[in-house]
Length: 316
Image 1 (cartoon, rainbow, N blue to C red):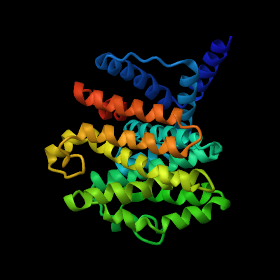
Image 2: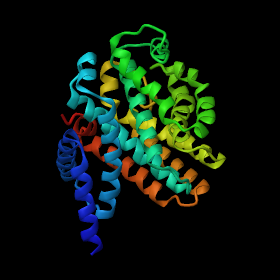
Image 3: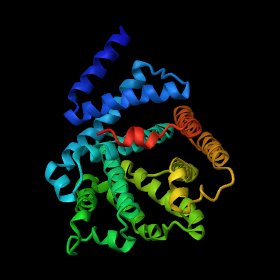
């Protein structure tokens, strides 16, 4: 009876998605099955987990639909489907990760907190794409946050996302959140150089991770802040590991391209995350299972030549 109820709930959430959301989810499920076949690990998700995952996806679908229009895509010179895939996939992973972490620390958060997390994920995605793919500098990107400044049309979505914070962040969150953003200048240290590779992991990554945490909860316990540091490092290393082949091909220097054993470094960092969450969080199990699963999938995919990024960020 419980399974039947969960199945109806999954169907109800699916039917409530936008048309692009339904199409994306169908292709994502298909690609997931194909990837699992190549990796030799068939998916075994119970209905309760599927319901949890699809509800998180629904939040991302809702935020994207509210913020991205056909006109915006035309102004940016991008296709709607391509933007949907790239932003919603990253938003989904971000919300899944940070929700699981807050749950591990018994911290409550509502639907508004989830939407704010997705908005921050979209902002982070847009910032990185403009920096990595469009060649904008930190100083040029920061200008988009000032409504008085004149900016290229390409920066209009970044400006839109950034200014949404004032409408979405509750007043009781605002003081701590904006105090944290006073250290935004640390992101100016982001460069693909041997000198900056370690700084990105030690300073930029924790700063960005705490933006997500601060936007979701009013108070960040010291124990959570301590646990975030190795997790943030793991996330950035994981991203660099996924991009390892491409970065080496274009001559881009990252911490992982300089590593003699990238796979070993990822496994070691995952273990450090496990130790930190086990030490500080009262309910660490679900979060640990998540990061161990993600680490395993990414490493296995790399070994077997499965392009995860192309499979799940290009479903248009």
